[in-house]
Amino acid sequence: MITASEYLRKEIGKEGSPEREKFKEESYAYYLSEILKARRKQLKWSQEELAIKVGKKRPYISRVENGEDLRISNFIQIANVLGLNFELKPA
Image (tube, rainbow, N blue to C red; front, side):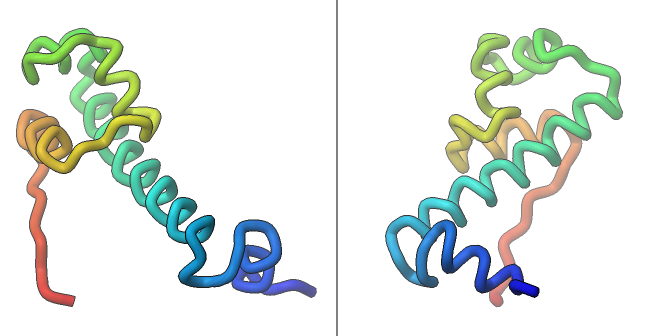
């Protein structure tokens, strides 16, 4: 049986490789976007409603929720509108 680490190394690249780093970034963006989307749905808001509250257009919210355009400043702004706290802590 192959481990998850072996699978990632084989399919995406060694730890620290450009391919692996890109995969990590995309995975993290997807994870964060799912948190935002789940909270929006919990509040029973449409993407359009969220867009109005954030001061953006609906297609932008869609891109964010798909992990395609997740700038940290916009992430924090959207999270705040959704009533979510964003906190950085030392590792």
